[in-house]
Length: 116
Length: 363
Image (tube, rainbow over all chains, first blue to last red; front, side):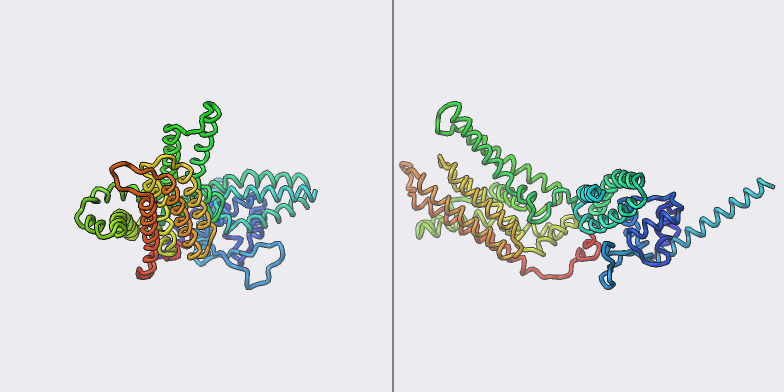
């Protein structure tokens, strides 16, 4: 039975940023950590363990995939595994973006009404 | 600063052990690398950032580890695998201790009671109550370990305890149907004492094989126990290990109504413990099997010699020391045959079980 992306919504802020971080392509754990910090303008500052708890949950939900870097030449000191957005994960991220857009649109309309 | 950083990294590595074992095997290295990179970045940004990152990691890790433990339990429950709290790594010290616990308890009880008794009373002979206490310590620790293993996932170390309990069940179930006055037995005894003894012992130990067949059949049929059945299929020596658990009970039986058997029983138990220890430390199935087989043979040899030495004739009965020793040899022959019966696991058809699916491998 196909899983509806809407059933995963709403996403928590860290989950949204982790998925967003992986949208352009695969990343190592540390790259996700830094990217989430940058994307959220330092509001979401995950610890290593919190990141991996979230990553574990996203793997269980099939929203991301864990990939082996054996076929490439890994840089020294970098993890040998990386993570990528799955097809389902991409659809969930898109659905969440649409939901957030709708919320923002409604909020702007209402705020404009108030200001008028 | 560099040495401080090294210390913090090492401490983080130690704290990682709070995670479940399987999670640590999968993500441990990655977590350490990401932490190291975070620390490198933080130190470049100054002391304040370093302290902030260290504190954040320090507080985040125990919570995350607890969460992973809960998730592992939930996942194990979902796929019918039991909680792995006492499923120690194979060949680890914890697993060896779990298997040797009753022997250690018995030796400590025996040693301390003898020392205490001799010291207080200056009497070298052990009183009857001392034997009762040692027996209770031995049986108590066996049943405690049995219950722990039964509750927490039927780990490998639990299997001999299962065998011990099965052999006790066997004596209640089959001993009632065992009639030494039965004509067939009497006929065999008259024609050859050895044949009669083999048949008499055989009627008892065959019961254990029947119980084991029932156990394997139930494990195969009941979904909750199918992972256990699958483990037996993957490693036939596990069943040998179950049956090895009957050996300590056989030792109690063979010294029935003997006095002063303590040193021989303790020596035989020590040999059985060593056999079990070698089993746990070996990876090759046949080496594992031989560890148990030799352990059983040597311990029964000690028991036979002990009976020969301790034997005192009872007037009116035709028992001889040779006959008493031979009865232990016959018992060993049957126990050896019972242990060999585990080879039959290899004869079962090897159809792909639904348990050999991907989600079992995840755990």
